[in-house]
Image 1 (tube, rainbow, N blue to C red):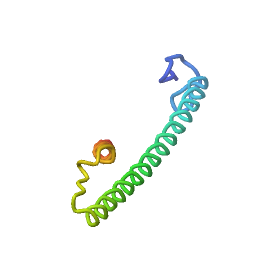
Image 2 (image 1 turned 120 degrees about the horizontal axis):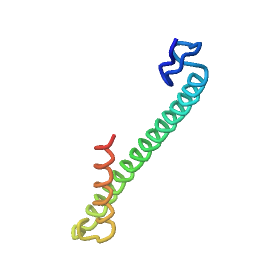
Image 3 (image 1 turned 30 degrees about the vertical axis):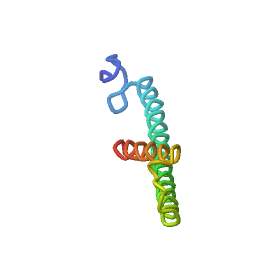
Image 4 (image 1 turned 60 degrees about the vertical axis):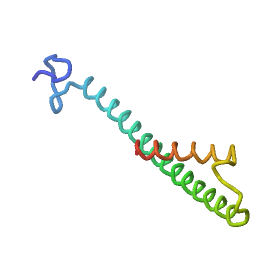
Length: 99
């Protein structure tokens, strides 16, 4: 029988000679490990996105409190805090597109 991988005539196991079968087994283990790592990265990304959304909501509430205590306060005129909100919105939107 001819090996489906290397083409040599040998005693094949499920269409593969022993060296090709061993190589494919090792390669499959590497693929499985890479998949596990990708799943872990996705889980971490999901947790980070969840935390970013929670922080964003907290900042929105703090802005609302400031507005209720100071009618002259405008979040969009607060400088760095407002820029952080805009950057956070953009990052959250991008992460959600990629999810």
